[in-house]
Length: 140
Image (cartoon, rainbow, N blue to C red; front, side, top):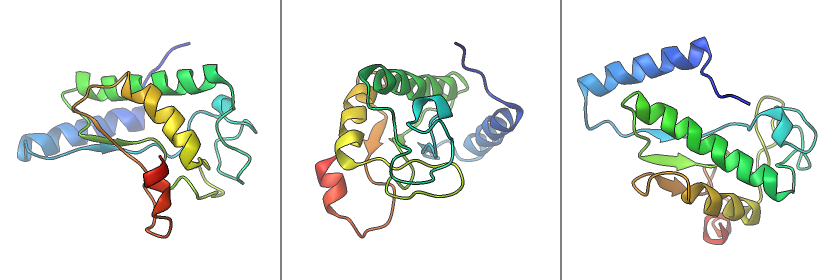
């Protein structure tokens, strides 16, 4: 398989590069809304419900960790180091648009794999969501 940016992603990179020229101290955070559909239980990029989460097999977790690391590396090659990264935007949300339900235990499992693949200078954040579940980031 291959990893390539689409036109919109390339445009985002160009805009971020311009922003970094204006403010070199600008900090960047990456926060995925959904893994590709083939990583998910129901094979759908949309959130839908709590069952449409990462496939519960080690090779899917490893593959998604590598995918996220490749995304971070792609930004870094463009001069855009990610200072922070979440592993799932709003992990307890199940929207009709791209998203994914991800429990704290499964986020912790994924975090260990991602941590081994991204630079230590990229800080991983848990629970990119509301403040209604303070136990989530503690568990993750």
